[in-house]
Length: 226
Ligand SMILES: [Mg+2]
Image (cartoon, rainbow, N blue to C red; front, side, top):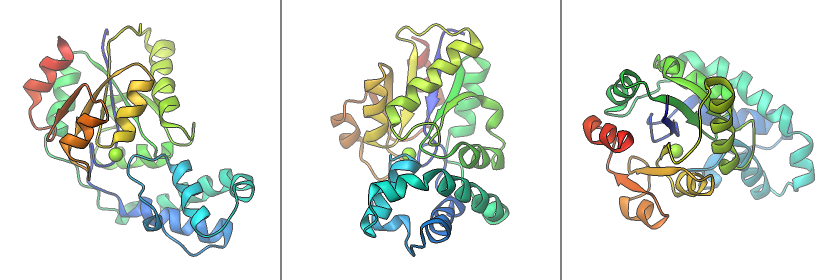
């Protein structure tokens, strides 16, 4: 396998997850005693750990307090997500299934790079029966910084799949944070305007290429294969 394609989850592969959002609120309440929600900040493109810090800072907590309980907070989120899982209606975005299937047929190694905690990200994919496609990943519980998550996913490909990294890694994402992380990690980036950001905004953040959505399988496959 001489190509590695990495995907963000939220607003790139799927529309949204109510369970994930509710899990944050449950953990904020249980672990820190704070009644709040992720809606107090703009959380697109941020890792779950970044979101935890930013939301709790709005409530006046200082970083030392947040840090002291962040592992418990993440654990509580995962447990809450598992309880809400059955009710969660996760919607796949147009073209995603066809694209993943085409990449797989072409023997392209795929992975996830997401701010989601691993059991939450994998849970969302499981619901759509997509986990089979993603052999590696960088997840929000592994690091607070998204660039590091890209590097972690590449490292796993090198370790577990004998992958050689040389200008052959592509990252799909809907937010400027995805594009920045990809650029900083030295990979090509494809901005997908299925989130709140426009193609223009994704271009300005330095994406190697920008598309409206993931519907044009042949076009994307050609771009990756060149
Ligand atoms: Mg996203």
